[in-house]
Length: 177
Image: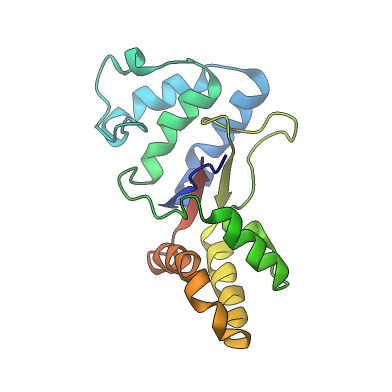
């Protein structure tokens, strides 16, 4: 089964300073720190499923009411959920092509957040982050590969477009399934 790769240009720096510490603590303690963050930032958040602004009573939208789902709502402060720049179902083929070409396929995803045994994963299929610097590095790596092997340009165009769009805005990436 091919899962669709969704990616969003992401303000990783602000996330790192504001939400990341709370999210990491909540993953370890299963605490309710995230509810306070959501309430304090309500006017800047959206429903991660529908893209609509969050309003009072947002708790009725919760299905699992766990750290992962609360984190999913809190993360919307740092990206526009209407602007998916992901690779859809082509992500695995692109990753395999990169690997065959000697480039780490991790540039398609990024790094998971939290404990290895229980990372942040709101969609229960994987969630990954890249800093703005990692996006820029990935773009340079990809451009170097394309200069050496220009025949790969059309197959890697979606990845190049995703990385360029994030880099253009000096953003990181949030990748989810």
